[in-house]
Length: 115
Length: 113
Image (cartoon, rainbow over all chains, first blue to last red; front, side):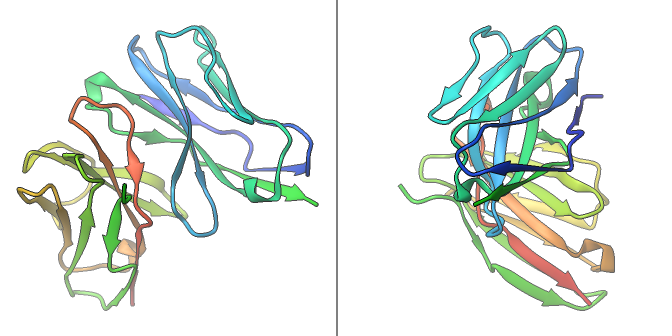
């Protein structure tokens, strides 16, 4: 069975600094997708970034980028120039064709941003 | 384009009752999935509907059921509520069954007393 592990329950970053959130996953599939979702206090789950496993190039969305290491099954999220609005729970998620793309989530990392 | 909407946003029920939650997907999206979020179990997949058919089901008891209508709106029903059913129920939509990216609604917070 596929699993997603986020080993950092909480992280803290100074405003304007850079922070990296870690995620590892386990799968025997070769065709899958990885996501980072952000859940602010409003509880609305917001898609931050998406990575296709067959693409070696790391995905980037403005201040958010990933470091995708397929062989190591690692998928970390880097947030540059952190802003107060980045404070939220961040969930790493996995989906695969064989499971009809249902999302398997990690346990989440709470990101605190210090002003 | 409007996002995924869920109603009601908050609900309080007592044990033994049943509840129905509603989800309207993004316009043009035909697949709807439901997830349960609790502090203890985290985010867990309940089921997915596409073209009014259940395509995938998570590991939940039969008290949890759902359906999808011809306009892609979906409802989720929980019968004989238990205290442990208290959770945030999230609905997510995507364009087709074979699309990978899902977009979430704001959730329905269910409290069972």
